[in-house]
Structures are given as structure tokens and as C-alpha cells.
Image (cartoon, rainbow, N blue to C red; front, side):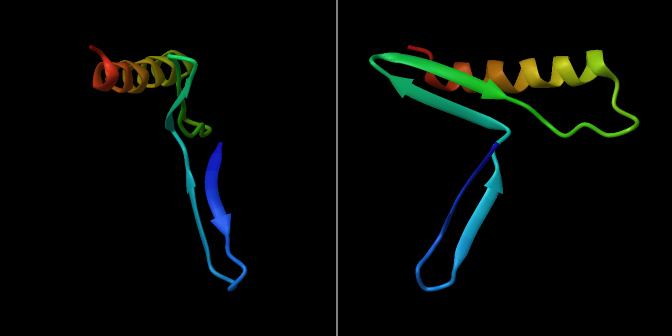
Length: 62
């Protein structure tokens, strides 16, 4: 997904969110992703996403 804003002054700031954490009621939902190209290997893309998620989870571990 994307995160960003469009200001009333005509400015905007946007990015692609490949690692996110959403906190609700003492629980966290982590998500990770990446870009898919014609040369992408599905298993490698999956492993890369899981690595991104693991690092994000480690950052919030007690």
C-alpha cells in the first residue's frame, strides 16, 4: 500500500509502505511486501517478505 498526504497548499508526500505495523487494543499486525517483476521468483519473494516481517517483529519484541 501507500501512505501519504495531499496538502491544501498543493504539496504532497507519498511513499510505498513495504513494512508496516498497526497497533490496536494491545495487539500488533505487521505486514511486509515488495515489488514483483517479470524475473521475480515466487519462493524468493515470499522469503524476502517474511524476512522483512521478522525484522519488524523483532523491533517490537519485549
